[in-house]
Length: 519
Image (cartoon, rainbow, N blue to C red; front, side, top):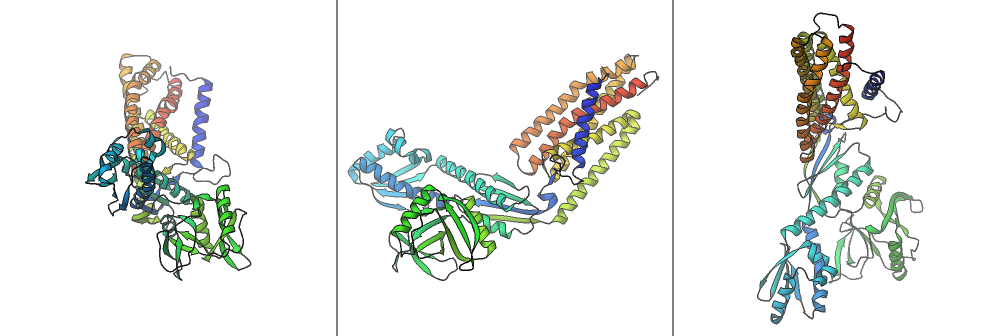
């Protein structure tokens, strides 16, 4: 029936007022937990920086192949089979040779994917799924397509989390960090006009190691020649890693008052402290190289054993560079190098133009709809227009409550919501006209019109909601922004039509039930 109980009227009024106030919070300053929330503007509206990063998987695949060499050697040695002449070429193919009389035995072992010993002790072999070929006694091993997909997916997930930690440490407002394909990551930073610092931070792998410098002038099998970051000298550094960045608990920029220089202090976990203490105890007088991404930051001489689990990294740091290095170390190393393959900076003027265009389009559409509804349905058109305005307040209020990011496609979703809300009212009013032809009691006719049009209105909105859900889960970036505003708009439309508009209609109809013609 058109009758609304006092409790129902109270709940509808309170619900509507709350979200209208939340909507208005976008234009006023408040310290209240709820009313201090604001809707965020996306990159296309606010301006900012866009980076498309590609993960370089080749070094990781090479490293995994190198790690597998010791596994294969040990495994086949226990089978009394000697593998020799290991080599990895540029195409990431692992070569090794066996004696001719052992070729068939090695082939059978590699083909037996259910070998319990391999599965139990060498899960790398099983999970990454090697494929192999044989030429006489020369075996060639590669990762299979499935294995490469697993590696790429794993690297992408790890890189995504590391990038998110680094960006969050900077304090960028509402960054958008999403996957793109199997080996790319999109980073959108609204409001950031100068991307140079973030590019520098994201471009570094931040692979930190502590290694001893070897006295000598040439590389050996267990050492490599590395340059100092400032280009001052080169050093022969042991490949044996004493400790890595994985053992860091915290890193912070600091001032060394004794030497009047900026340093990075760090704290180690229990394992790292133990290793560092043992290395510095036995290595007094040696130089300890602190290596970041293949370059030596500093190489101090060990004077005393450091067993406290804390230390400092010195170098030619400014406070900003020390802060960035500490940030990189806290957020952890990237699993693979990242290459910036696309970069765009969207100026705030373009964003303002987009906002203005969207507002103008919304205003024109809104005015045309209001004029049409008043011309067509008179007082009920006015009720529909009031409902339409409240519907927009509800929609933006809900987006504000969840601090959603509004993009240009999101504005398009709001404009579409206006059309859908009007469409629902038109269906209801036309149905009421049909009911009045057969029903003399106008109260019954209005009630029947709302009830009998409900199926058509709900079905139309459900099909649109399904499309919005599919767009949300299958789309990305701007498409998701459109689907979110469209989806939320469907729920606010149904509420405004069947609660707000129906309440206002019932009040008017009941007060004017004796009039000969209401619509």
